Length: 331
Image 1 (tube, rainbow, N blue to C red):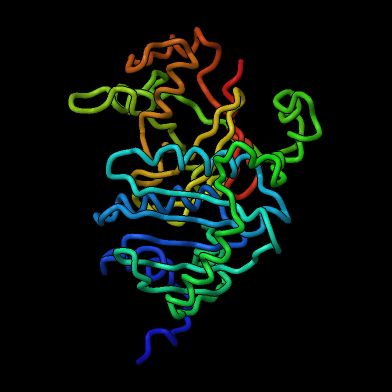
Image 2 (image 1 turned 45 degrees about the vertical axis):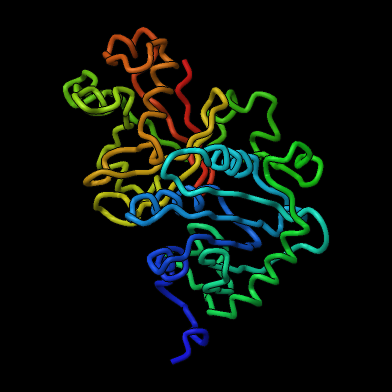
């Protein structure tokens, strides 16, 4: 059978995004009309967890010049690019089409040692939603040499997302209408009727966990800042956070979070029973954030009294979209 005549209409996530690495591919070039930073975060994490060699991913987003891009997505892409010097992490580069006609096509081109190896085209944007089982998308294997010619043509009309003049080339939009309409979005979001949940940072005994929650890393051989936000079973089952099943959580979607003090994080629900919200690329990031926020040194043990001295022992998440959240830890 000629593989390049294969039409993929379900279960193609691994075939298109992961399996070619096992066959020696070391570079993935993508043209996608729309794309999300949460997809890039998930993809890079999945490669890191799959026991395969790091690769280089180059993403060209085609519709930014026409439709613009959410600020949270733009900042998320820049943050991922900034991690490119992390040891053993695949490199990621992101560009936006800023000249010529908008590009709505979706192309995935794998290369092996600089030579076109395998390519797919179709309807699936580079987003977690497009590659989820619930969506009906098509991808068709195509000629990789012709795919490279097309990629090069589109890339010539693009600019890196980190370019100093990118703000002048595309419209960067607020993450949510409330951030555009209100001068003080934080003050107004609480009364905006946006779906929200409040999570405690305490264990069932009313104290902080000794080796869990904000103190997850407080044990020999662990980085002491490692932490997670405990997720109760009722909220886990409520579909408020993105999940695909009740297991280790390593396939769960990544989601983007803007905090009330202006920080951006990529989070994921994981661990057995989906009981923890983590920063999947580095579990110390969320621990460093909370310690800094409540006035503790990096690596310090967090007691209940530390949270009470700060002013609260819980946090509130507001759901702005399928993969976009706002986290309120204000007092």
